[in-house]
Image (cartoon, rainbow, N blue to C red):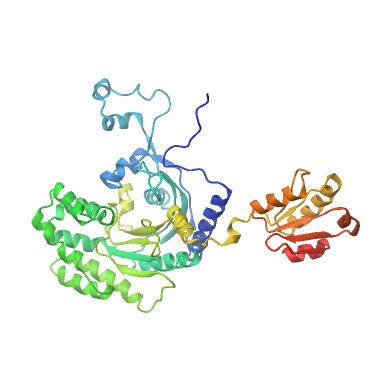
Length: 456
């Protein structure tokens, strides 16, 4: 008996309706990227192993899918490495490539490789799949699309302001009103680690803090203790969890808390600039919130960091995120090139729109008109009309088989085709077509010119 077919865990097939809905989201995001002046690029689905490793922190590196070398990949492994059966020691000998984990590091590699062809500041967008060996759960997959926009070659905080506006525009266009755009600054987190006396543990501190909304305060503190951050240092975090008031109120409290930290105050000033900008620039439907516990565990962030939550009532993780990175290209030899970027989580945005039931009805329409097949002679006349309609931009098709009309109408109904055309003996004699609106059942008989005019 043949094995039941399946897809790998954490991956999915997409049917016509799902693809149509996903394309609607992608096209909405893409149109806004273009509106803001971003240019498209694409990079390979896999990169050299050394390009990716060491860029995402210890936890991120563990989630990278490695690709085995072709041929007899074990033949080049030294005997002493092989007998130890330590996969970490074997990997450099058996894997030279890996599936990309995100689009940001490949983008940094692209910028360095093509720096002489690029005009800076360079604004790019990229919509492609990425892969992570993560534990699959609701809204979290091993293969998923990222929709990224980045600017490199500018230190200006106006870029941060624009990205907040871009988030707001995209989510407003999709009908996801009431999203929360959370913002923090890694310099503030560096300042807090100074106050705690844990500067040497900044990465451990931010990785643990990034899990706050997933595992809670007690487990975050336990993880910090396990990483060597003392209990007295952790106690100094208490004011961080008790900030209150609006954006500017929290900034005032942070100024007091971080008064002895130069880098911390620098982060506060950068956020104050952004807050001041949005006193005069109105957001359409999103809320901008300062969240000082927002850390984002990726090592390359150095300034502002973003995370977007879906509207109230939608139980999902973040639907977008990003931040400022001052020297990401430095890892590939191009120093002092600041950048900032954001990402949209396509799959979670899809789930949010689905939960709220706000996909436009027209999104899943692939065919506008179905011609009912009454026989050979009628089908020939229908095909002539279909050619004319398609040349006028009207998506049309003929039901291919001469089945009972009721079955053909049921097919149109299941396919959500809004119109059918009946072309029988009477219509042939009059050289006209009967147009039936599926939703209401209304019918009218029209010439081909009238038909095109109505459907266009």
